[in-house]
Image 1 (spheres, rainbow over the protein chains, first blue to last red):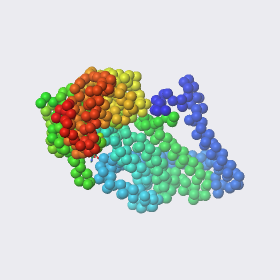
Image 2 (image 1 turned 135 degrees about the vertical axis):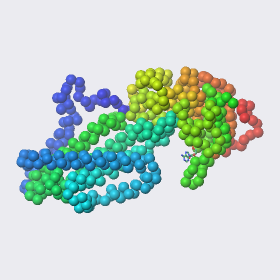
Image 3 (image 1 turned 180 degrees about the vertical axis):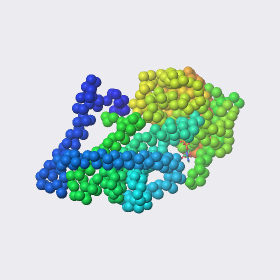
Image 4 (image 1 turned 120 degrees about the horizontal axis):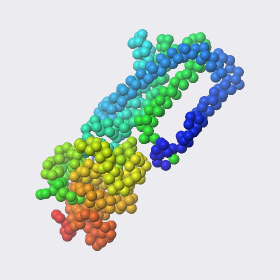
Length: 275
Length: 270
Ligand SMILES: Nc1ncnc2c1ncn2[C@@H]1O[C@H](COP(=O)(O)OP(=O)(O)OP(=O)(O)O)[C@@H](O)[C@H]1O
Ligand SMILES: [Mg+2]
C-alpha cells in the first residue's frame, strides 16, 4: 500500500471514543504493558536470587528513594535536561552548518570528512577531564560542550549526504526557471534533507544526553542527575543509584519522543504506512 | 531564417579527470515557432547535453544556441522541462508540484489563479481528482503527466522533453502520445523531444534529427511531412514504415554498425 493520508489510518480511536478510547488504544496500552512486564521480571530476578539491597536494588525499592529525594530529582533532572537541550541545539546549528558546507562543495567534503571522523572517533570520556581542566569552574559550559561534541557528528554527516545525493534533475528543474541557489535550497534541498536530518537527530538526542551525564559523573560538580548518581555511589545508596538510572531513562524517552513529534510535524510526508 | 530555436555549429566538451571529453561537435538544429522536433541518437551521444544548452543551464564551447535570434546565455523562464525521471517533490501535493514554477517565475497571479491554472492543466491530462494526492500515491504514468503539467504551467514558449516516456509501458506511452497532441493543440509551444523510440519520434514530431555517435553532429534530418495531431493507425501505413526504416538505418550508421549508402533517401532534407 502506498502513502495513506493520516486521517484515513485506522490507528486512531474511532470517532466519539474520546479520551477513554485513546487511553485504551494499542499505542498507549502496548508500551505500558511492556514496561510493567519489564519491572515485574526485574523484581522477580532480584527476589529469586535473594540479592540484598547493597548488591542490586529492585523496583519496589525505588518509590522510597523518589519520595526521599524528590526535590533533588526535580532540581537535578532539570539541570541535566536544559544542558542537554542547549548542547543539542548547538549540535544542530553547527552540524547543519558543516553538513551544508560539505554537501554543496566536494572540496570541502574531501577536506573536512577525515577530520570530523577522527574527531568523532576520540572517546569522549578522555576529553572530559581535558575540558574540565581547560575551563575549570565553568560547569554549565563544560557540560554543554561535551553534549555538543558527542552529538553533532551524525547531524553533519546526514545533512551532507542528504544534500550531496540530491538528484541533479531536481536542481535543473528549478535552475532552468532562473531560480537562485537560495531558492533551490529553500524549496528543494532543505525539505528533501529533513527525513535524514530527523533520523540523525534521534541518534544525536540520546548521544547528547550521554555527553551531559558523562561530564556530570566523571567531573563531579554537584549538578545534574549524574552528580546525584555519584552521591548515591559514594554513600552506597543502591536504591538511589537505580532511581537515578530510571529517571535518566525517563528523560531520554521524553526527549526522544519530542524529536519524533517534531519529525511528524515537519517531515511527516516521508512516512510510509506499512502495507 | 524565422526559427524560434536556432542551433548552429555547436561544439561542447566536458572536462573530466582523464582530459576533455568531446560530446557535441558540429550540431545544427532549427525549429520554427510551433514546430516539434524529435532528436534521436545512440545512447550517450550527447542528447541530454543538448537539452541543457537549450535551457541555458550550460554554455557551449563554440557555436551558437539562439532562441528568437538572441543568444542563450543563462536560464530563462520561457522554457519548460520534463525528464525521464518525473522528479516530483514528495512533500508537496500534486497540485502544489504543478504550481512550483509559478512560485519562481515572476508573475502577478494570485494563489487562487495559480491553483486554477494548475487544475485546468491537470484535468486536461486526465488527473482530475488527484490534485490533493502525494506523488507516491500515483502510478508512473500519472506522475509523468503531472510532471508534464509542471513543465507547462508557466506557459513556456519552448518545451524540452528528455525521454519523458522512456520508463513507461507501451500502452501508457501511447496514451501519453495522444495526450501530448491534445496538449499542444490547447497550449501551443515549440517542442524538442529527446527519445529512443523511433515510432514515438514520427508520431509526435514534424521533424526528426538523427545525431551521430559521440561526439554528436547532426547526421540526418527527416521531415515527417505531417504536423499536428494524427491517428495511431498512422504508424501502420506504408509511409510510416518507410520513415522508420530510414531512421533505423541512420541509427545503425550512427552506431557504426552500417555504412552510409549512396542512395540518398527521398525524404531527406539535407
Ligand atoms: N557533467 C558531466 N561531466 C562529465 N561527463 C559528462 C557529464 N554529463 C554527461 N557526460 C558524458 O557526456 C556524454 C553524453 O552525455 P549525455 O547525457 O548528453 O548523453 P545522452 O545522449 O543523453 O545519453 P542517454 O541516451 O543515455 O540519455 C556521456 O558519455 C556522459 O558520460
Ligand atoms: Mg540522456
